[in-house]
View 1 (tube, rainbow over the protein chains, first blue to last red):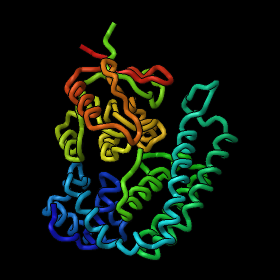
View 2 (spheres, helix red, strand yellow):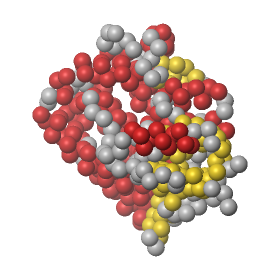
View 3 (tube, rainbow over the protein chains, first blue to last red):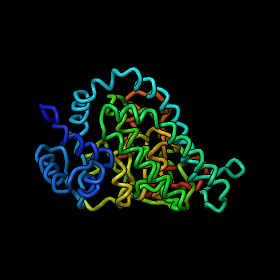
View 4 (tube, rainbow over the protein chains, first blue to last red):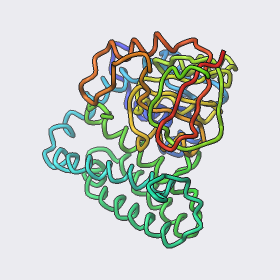
Length: 206
Length: 139
């Protein structure tokens, strides 16, 4: 445990590591907007503080990372947490999130005679319909992302990442819907959700 | 017939039937330790919830099978397990116990009982049924 609140740059880097669960310095640099050398320096400091370990060339958060992030988020985002506009939008997000997860599952599996089977993506009309639904759900995040970016510019990265994934999908790169190893819609959405919960000091529900 | 020790939601149908020793992972440190041990693929991973997000590195590093004690196949972990094609049984309950997971109303003893009963057991996952995933003793 760290006794003092994390420096904001430390927070931003550790937050990326915690959201991605394991992340290389170039990835952290890309996501945080910091130079790679600076990321390396910050990571060394985080390792010294016991907040990060480096394994297989990537940084992973230790058990101490979440409490340190939670304490820092309470400090840095106190104003966000009392912003009635944000709170109202977040309430609506929970519904959109449930719809997103269901829609993502329907991208992976189709219902055949009451039985869920893997979507082999041979029915382009079905796939297009699911992609259309996902597009609309992502668009519904817009006001919340804008409101959060008004408090911390790093939230502005999410619309850019969503837009890049949507553009790639429109170009036929359908792996950008749900691939866990790319900056897919599912990955970006998941990271945003976790980031949002941490920012607001809320717990994830089942 | 082999004993079915536990069963829960089958996240996706698969003929893959991984076997290994169940390892209960309670924290990110447990996941890091397992990855660093180089023995990730010897174990079926047992975690508490479908929202146990710290499991992601294990899945990307080649985990062979997952059991959760709560959560739904539509959750983040369910989506990930289908993407990685890692067989996964969610909200597993012990066949020898009446205790069941209920959202928002499950006491600690439920999770403790499952972890205590399954951790260290040699098992195989049977994920061929379209609804029920089974944890089978593999002696």
